[in-house]
Amino acid sequence: MVKLLTDNWTLKIISLIFALLLWMFIMGERRLEVGYPVPLELQSLPKGLMVANEVPSLIDVRVSGPRTLLAKISPNDISVIVDLSDLQPGLTTFKRLEERLNLPSGLRVTRLSPSFIDLKLERIKQKLVPIKIVLVGEPLSGFKVGNVRVVPDEVIVEGAESELKSVSGVTTEDVDLNGVNEGFSLIVPLVHRGIYTYFKDEKTTEIQVEIQPVEGLSPAEKSNIEPQKTDSKGEGDN
Image: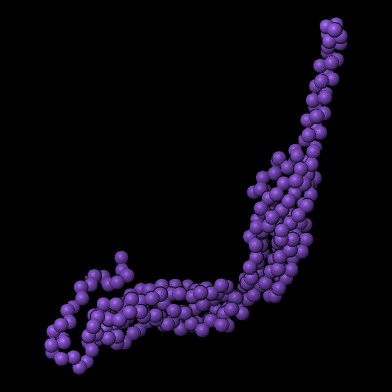
């Protein structure tokens, strides 16, 4: 028995090494399937146009191929690239996204979700719209709101042409008047709840509110009005 094990031991070791190499090769070439969340890249958007619909930022991709190739892939190296350079305003459907996937040769896409995307391009337009001040609350008893000014009183909104048609104005954030007994000026943010429209430049405005005593109060009523203590910088200043 010992002689059988020791005879031609060199040949037996070589055979064992070849068997191991063959096993490693077979395991390395074994096909696997792996899933990746792949970013969707929109490139070369024509000047003066914008995307005006919901487009997924990630595509779920399943890829099959040899284990050795899959082991070398990083999800950061894969993307779905869509070239927009020749597109005109309107709706375009991009099918067969797997053909736009930058995969190494030897790998095959087995599934994409979504398998296509609809892309709506619109012209970017601008519109000058009025600013409406939103006042909430009431001044201190015995006082009323006088003149109210906003500077500037208009702002430019920019964005998708179709949505811009329905934009008739914007508002300020709420300006609280509770307990106020004297005029003030304040820089306030503007509010616009657009989806594909936005402020071009200005996002704030200055409001100037005049607070006046209510006319017709008796001397006794006026004597009950105490001046409100306010910060010398005014509400909203830091």
